[in-house]
Length: 160
Figure 1 (spheres, one colour):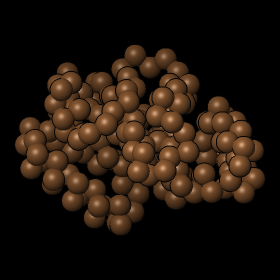
Figure 2 (tube, one colour):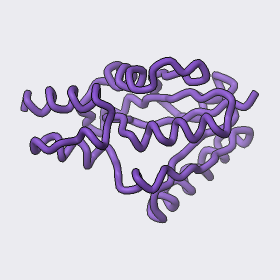
Figure 3 (cartoon, one colour):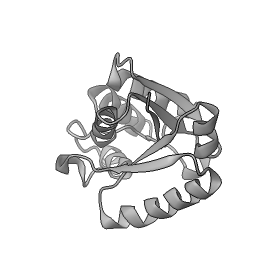
Figure 4 (cartoon, one colour):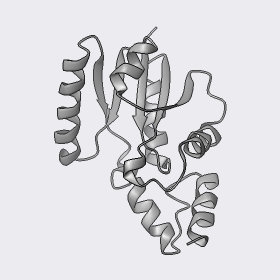
């Protein structure tokens, strides 16, 4: 059985992230979505809430699990017997960073492979930072994120 991990901050999860999760499930048998703590990034939502948002958005998908994590992704993968890291590539600029990370991960754990997936062209421009900025200014984010996430973003923007 081929198991992979797709890691990110997912602050918040977007339709682009969900697209990549579904694409990954087309390539592997099991996918673990690893939600990074990353307090240094100044996240809007706590880690557990980001995990919950993904669970709500995905629904019941028996081949997909969602877990919080901190530390090195290769350690997380190795501890769970996962041999593949999935990374999304939207632009050439993404590739430079992701290629460097893949080589470092290979150096840290030669038995874990990285595969790159491209999202649907519908989502190539999409990222969580832009979505948060739109929400912060009262814009409509409903076409970028699941409905439950849009509601949480509106509530968070209203608290500011």
